[in-house]
Length: 330
Image 1 (cartoon, rainbow, N blue to C red):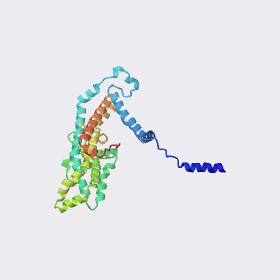
Image 2: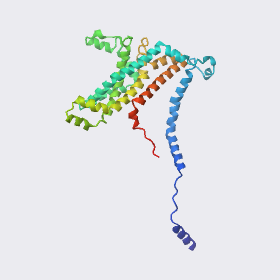
Image 3: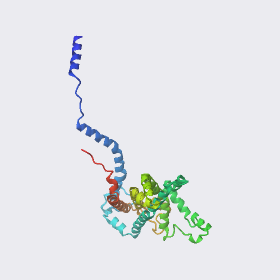
Image 4: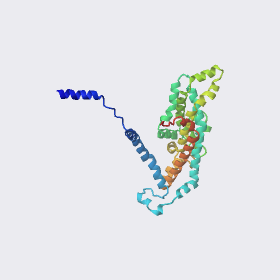
């Protein structure tokens, strides 16, 4: 009994044990493990479904491969053609026209869809009767699947379709056209379909951006005698700049990679009037039995999109991204 009391007394007199501080190396290892745990799966998916296909397309583009090729074909020196596929694509008038169609749609999107979306968004941002119904009707085309929308317009724009029937019913029969079969107007018709399909997304982005514009600024300007248009021009639209630049970036990338709506409605015809780089790639590579040449077109499309995206981010999005980059403090 005496020994127990003495041991307890010695423990009390010794005081609490000193706290153990974790080693700095253990904390860094734990952080690295957490990063690997959370980022690893997404990084593996990105490498497997983005980086690896790009690298394989780059390898295939240097070969003249058959439709159903095998890995042994890559070891055949007779199938290696170097940059011949790239030269062939850049010398093909059909591919050059496809590139021109992409950039024409890109330019029209920025010049027409952008101002149209801003104007409608400014209108829908005001207190109007039935504003919710108008927003729903404008956004419905965007949520439709591209295949459904494309097939619907393909049927409506037939020579005996609903659009020509409506024009004749209104006494405007002189304006009936072969909307998707006339090479002179097919691309413009396609752009009208694309505007109907995607302008709702642009309007939604603009409306979201308008929610971040303080109403106090507009009220103060109105008190100073500014008109509604002056308020929008000098206050609202400048503050909407970051949203406009983000939408323009998405529109540029979408116009360069345009495929599904064109493929469903016209498949790039008539006479390559609506062909894009993506439809040309699928037509030559997948259905033309030339996977090597199609891979070269895919690499060209990738490089064009990458260069434009980097240049746009460097000069247009630089100030928008500057505040989002944080630096670690030591």
